[in-house]
Length: 116
Image (cartoon, rainbow, N blue to C red; front, side, top):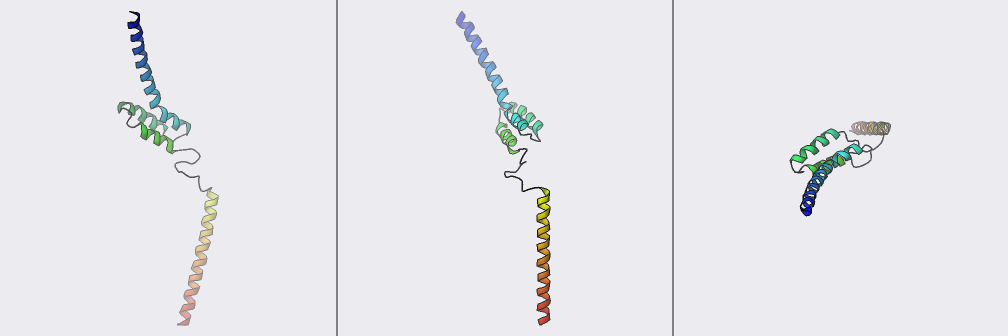
C-alpha cells in the first residue's frame, strides 16, 4: 500500500517537474533578449509561448534571434566604424580627393586640346 502511494507521488512529481522544465526552457531566449536589451524582446517572448504549441520547433530560431543583437554593437558582427565626426572627416577627405582628380583631369584635357 505504501509503495502505491509512493509511486503515485513519484509520477505526479515527475510530471510537474517536466512541465516546469519545459516552461523554464522556453523562456531562455526571452531572458537572453532582456539581458542584451534586444529591441524585439516582446516579440521573442510571445513567440516563445507560441513555440510551446508547436512543440518547440520555433525555439532554436528564437535562440538565434535573441543572440543576434547586442547593445554595444547592434546587429553587426564587428565593432562600429567610428563616430559620425570620423565619418564626416572621411567624407571631407574623399571630396577633396575627387576635386583634385577632376582638376587634374581637366588640366590634362586642356593640354591635349592645345596640342591639336
